[in-house]
Length: 89
Image 1 (spheres, rainbow, N blue to C red):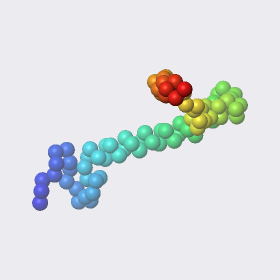
Image 2 (image 1 turned 180 degrees about the vertical axis):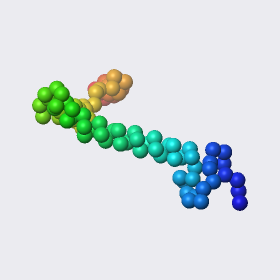
Image 3 (image 1 turned 90 degrees about the horizontal axis):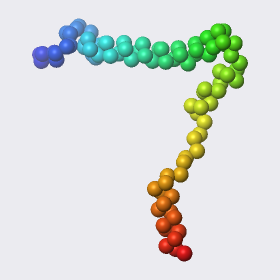
Image 4 (image 1 turned 120 degrees about the vertical axis):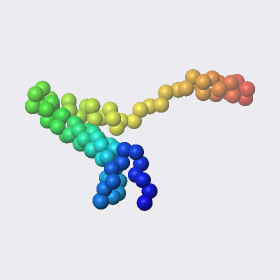
């Protein structure tokens, strides 16, 4: 039977959870994701309760994350188009 890599613990269960480093990574990712979900749900309620926020105040930041952004003109691209237009005149 091959030796376990450094940092790994032998276990009867086996699988990825036999590795202590992976368990730490999994726990950290779980806590981070849970905090992100809680932030999106609980923060509006806190704003309503503590700051007397209106529904418009709560929704305004969310609109910014999904609203389309108009592309800006690229000056390099615009210069290239101007040169092509001049050469065709």
